[in-house]
Amino acid sequence: MLFYILSGILAILIVLRALKTRSFNEKSYLYLYLVLYGSLFGDRFFLIKDGPSWHESFLEILFIFGILWFSVEWAWKSFSQWRTQTRPLRELKKRQGPFHEIVTASKLISQAKMGALIILERATSLEPWCQKGIRLDAKLSQELLFSVFTPPGALHDGAAIIRNACISACGVIVPLTKSPRFPKELGTRHRAAVGFSETCDALCLVVSEETGCFSLADRGTLFYDIPFEKLAEFLEQALRFRLDKNQPSVRTLEV
Image (tube, rainbow, N blue to C red; front, side):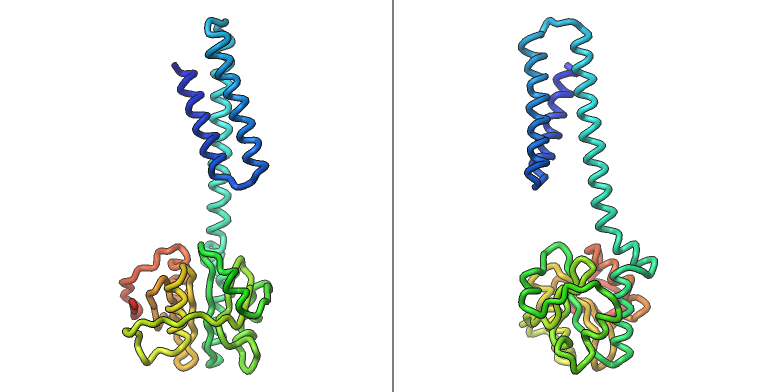
């Protein structure tokens, strides 16, 4: 009975891994494993049903090893992906890395009485939008981001899109929200930030040219007049999709 349970578990693990992977080479070796263990199962069930006890013990050990191998490999890959995805957030807490560069550049832009619209990619790819602007594909730095939004340069109008720790494109024109409840005192950048956040899961950071205040637009909700001391905290929560709409420390607008 133990043999059949182990073989079933191993077959399920292999099939699940094969369905989730996109690489043809990885799929090939997973299906090869499936054929190998299937042949061992057939050998045990059809050919030597009444074989020696050592053979049954050997097959059980082999299937246990297979389960452990796939379980450990899956756990390690999941842990590696988690480390990769959360690395920028850990760097932000340590005041280093690409998101810290964005926070610092935003402060410099605010102090210089300039405006900015910075779009941060999350799950949805923003490559189609990058093609509509001026391509940069440059490594993100606070100096470069500050210079992008410094007038009268050709790049300061429109939005800058951040992907994979790079400034992928600048001067991107994004749709404005059409909500009639949008406050008239907020400018075009805020309206564009909310409008773009309504179309995808991207996070939009706005630096107001008039007031120097910071705002975040997240899936149709605008969190505005964020104090600079809380900007890094808000940014981290938003990137984790954990930004609460009922924030007591800032004004929130749902359109």
